[in-house]
Image (cartoon, rainbow, N blue to C red; front, side, top):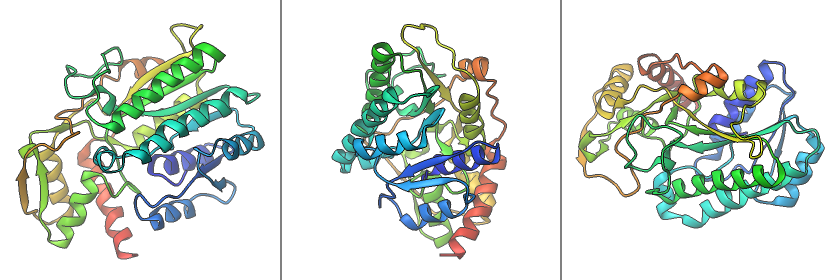
Amino acid sequence: MAGFIGFHTALALAEAGHEVFGVDNINAYYDPRLKHARLAQLPDRVGFAQLDIADAESFAQALHAAAPDVVVHLAAQPGVQYSIENALAYARSNLLGHLSVLEACRHASGLSHLIYASSSSVYGDTTPVPLRETARVDEPVSLYAATKRADELMSSTYAHLYGLKQVGLRFFTVYGRWGRPDMAYWIFADKILKGEPISIYNNGQMRRDMTHIRDVVSGILAAVETPPRFADEARPHAIYNVGNSTPEELLTIIDTLETALGEKAERVMLPMRPGDVTETYADISAFSRDYGYRPTTPISEGIPDFVDWFRSYRAGL
């Protein structure tokens, strides 16, 4: 709940009149002050407990006490590059953590369905674009991607074995206010304002389906409030892309940041990094069909909005 997408989702659910209870372990992957600052923005009526979802017993007890109608599982260890540096963190958070959530949910009474976060990273770097949910996803190029695909397979198994209804959402490059400091757009903005050079990998020959947090949250809320649809009721599990469906050139993203910041970047061109992909581009037709998903925020609006918030946040540190 103290994470980027989790915070925005909890806030939107509360504003829509839902009772909300969330958990987070507040780890130090990035500055915990940002996570606490997010929590401070939530209404007092939103419940919160600091715990690790990989602690299966504690999480199961919290879920039993909350007795939710719907579980939205957004907790994970994010980051492609960090998965190369600290592999074991991903095993605990993304594998054991997801399994812990599945176990607790299958024993929960009164639970309508589970919504969980996957990632566009599962597509690897060989799948033809636009990326469709029916594409093969058995060649991940990072451990992070492999863990998210493993989560999808575990969820499919639990749907088959126990009838646990689940909706998996493959997010595409989510950005916006209260974002993550490990994301490229945040790193670029920070370095530009400090007058430091920015590293541009693959000589800028990359495209990203930049998806604004408002659009992502609108999709999550639709998945919470709409009864899920399944092609196979014997295995009630569906996976959807959640993107903007408008891939942007990396250099265009940087140009837009420079304009919003009123500063030019010193650009250092570098080769491709291990684990990166050249392009993400979501086919969102299935999610649009089943949940009415319609992204509305282009980077020409979303990035200046982030910059406005970012200047204020930096000033308060």
